[in-house]
Amino acid sequence: MTDRNIGYVGLDHHHAEPYLRTLETVSGTVTSACEPNPEFDAASVSALGDVPVYGNLEELLSSEPLDAVFVTLSNRETPAAIERALDAGIDVYTEKPAARTAADLEPLVSRAERSDSTVCVSYPWQFHPITDELRTLIDDGFFGDVRSFDARYVASQLRFRDTSHFLFDEDASRGGILQWLGIHWLQLFAWLLDERITRVNASTTAGTDGVEVEDAATLQLETAAGALGSLQCGYYLGEGLYDTHLEIYGSDGRSSWDPMGREFGFNDETTLELDDASGDWASTPHRTITHEYESETGYGGSWGKEFVEAFFDACNSDGEAPVTLGDALGVLHILDAAYESAETGEWVTVDGVNRC
Image 1 (tube, helix red, strand yellow):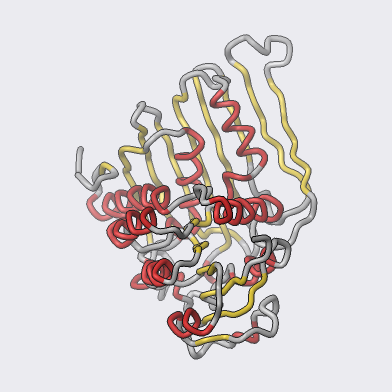
Image 2 (image 1 turned 135 degrees about the vertical axis):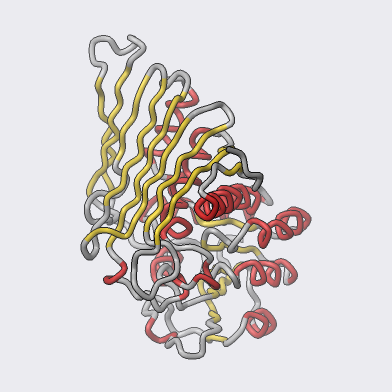
């Protein structure tokens, strides 16, 4: 199957327009949509086009012959939507983190594994060319023993954002910047290092009037192999601005990368800096690798498109999605530990057991 009938579920979402732009470039057609919020104007989503829009998922699934659905609902509503799609025997691409908590998602993991449907969770950063380069360097031993990793995800202040949206509602989303933006780097480091994060120590603050979820978070992390990491994230900057950073320190090498730049886009270029401490690069121990972007529309630009195409390839071949529900469950376990730690002020293991 080269062309697919796709239903889009959840138009009242910041990523709906970008995802729809991505879907314009792949071998699939959005033939229908669903938006459960009756107050949201589906016509405001310019990339949707002239397709029928249903008020609930059951009506969409019973009325349209679909091969797949793209889901951008609230974290609270997403697990039930995935389950209904699995019951209908269709494939699912869902916005991260796919649930409020690990307990909410866990029953779906085995359900999806028993199903003929493919479910993919949207963590496309692992398809970035620089990320692929880092994974290769780790696998080839450039870093030696990874000792530490550091990440930063700082974005524009909440006064520049629509805080009435469910993304900033505790009941619908569970958390704020950590579960919405910082989670990208949690997932990415777990994938890059191929190492389980076992302990978390976190602090969060809700410093924006009228917003219950956190607008800042700081995490200390420890892997099963003993590597120490940190994550700093916050809504601190002016409108449209970002400050991001990913760093890896090993016994033999170091890397430094700003994935997004000052104003995030999907053209221009980005540079990975490398320092060799092993002596293998004695003549040029400091090197840079620059990735030049081709302008690409949609969510995640060119690598976001490749991630979606990998999902469709998995659907066609009955292969594994690039990020499975099981992978997403692991990330949610880290989030669970982080939020518990922020409440208790203690180190928390990822399985939820406190340990000082």
